[in-house]
Length: 280
Image 1 (tube, helix red, strand yellow):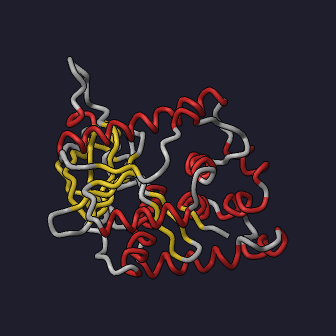
Image 2 (cartoon, helix red, strand yellow):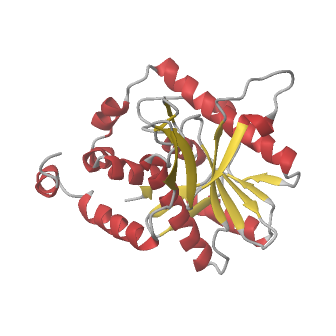
Image 3 (spheres, helix red, strand yellow):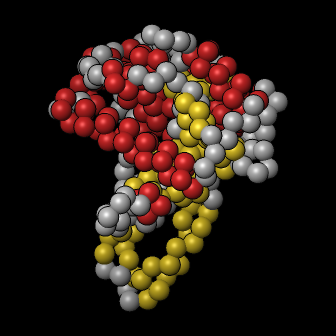
């Protein structure tokens, strides 16, 4: 059983959802199928457009070589009920041209060559597989992970000066997503004699940006550092208050424990699984 970041996130959100994903794709798709097919296509296209925007942002601010590590088949992208999420849809298409093993090897070769910017690098450790968005080489020889989200709100809501603003700590779903990515990538890097990631960043849309003239990628894209604790000053009850914004990712030990439980539980039949999760 392959453990992807989407399966990991599903399990963290609702274990039974992850089990359905493994055992019954039809039920899983019915549960997740909130949008129409047209809306699904729009979301996929938006996601690619934001990735392209981040790629352009990196090209303009960094200026170094970028290498695409998956076959470029975007013109052929289609949506169907047989593919439960965007990552797996892309994986299905990718494997018509190559294999996960080949993708991972191409990534390791690019890291060996110290390619400055990696787009869609792939990593696998045991049953755990991730394909990241961007990795950018830093002056110290380590890579920085940049995860792209086609969203303007990735943080929890905090009351500030009478308004609810999404400026708090990162939403749990994104914490789980980034934690799994960081764990798998670092484990793979270590296995092959490379240094750990320098840091983890998230790139998303700046909802305050208003286009005036040519598109300003520096204003459109926000890049926040993850896996840190920072302070946030807000106005609550007419007083300035300093809040802690905890974006620390799950520890390797925590991830290993969750992965072990998933490997033990997800293959179980429904009755046995329900005994472990009776109230789901």
